[in-house]
Amino acid sequence: MSDVGGANAGSGNTIPAVILFGSPGSGKGTQAKLLRQNCLPGPHISTGDMLRHHIEAGDEIGQEVRKLMKSGRLVPDELVNRLVDIRLQDPDCRDGVILDGYPRTLAQAGVLLKLLRLRGMVPVVVHLMVDYEKIVARLSGRRQCPVCGTLYSVSTNPPKVAGICDRDGAALVTRDDDREDVIRERLRQYELQTRPLLEFFGTAGVRIFEIAGGSADPASISGDICRFLESVKVGSLRVSGS
Ligand code: ADP
Image 1 (cartoon, rainbow, N blue to C red):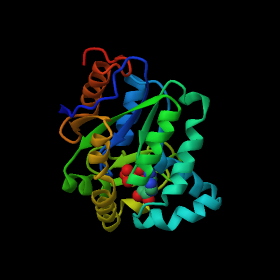
Image 2 (image 1 turned 90 degrees about the vertical axis):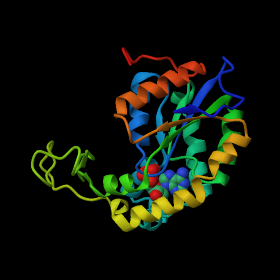
Image 3 (image 1 turned 135 degrees about the horizontal axis):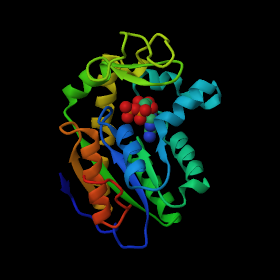
């Protein structure tokens, strides 16, 4: 775990925009939920969830992104930038936000820093580092209930009856983008397009906190992140005893 430094966080008067950064399967979604519970104000904004909602709704955006998402490729920058810009204007973002899966390209990162500056928000990157082979194993074992959305893991969090949702008895499915070939493509896209953002953030003076995402349990990772955020005066620690 390390704080890679940065100049513009922790100045005391800041509205945090915590950017959860890491490859697919690094636990960004899980950490976003825990951070909200434990130490950060503001909503969890996941561009992947936003895009999936459009697909479910079958609207124009959904139709535009469906094929790209199924194949593990990224959707156009202008589209996600627009969705995030609109979302950041919602009143619940006033005290801060937790970004998950955004930004993912240099073009997105540039736009985000401008959007945040306009709103007086300060970005802090939390980089969840994990081993790719573990990710492939974890994601390809993931199953989801098509009715209520609950996620299971064949190895670490199986349903009581194999293949059946505990809550509503529906047959579980593998998300299209959790197939092994698609996972490898998502990891390739991450290496190619997203990982280079770390250098961009570093150059832009954004504070980056690096933590091993796969080696500890999610609650203790969350505790470490909350302590770091508190140390840079972002968020308030509400995790007792961790
Ligand atoms: P993961 O982090 O596990 O890849 P997400 O739910 O964040 O899962 O993303 C799923 C898919 O949604 C991505 O593979 C990509 O096609 C699309 N997507 C999500 N966020 C972005 C983004 N910021 N830019 C471009 N495409 C995105």
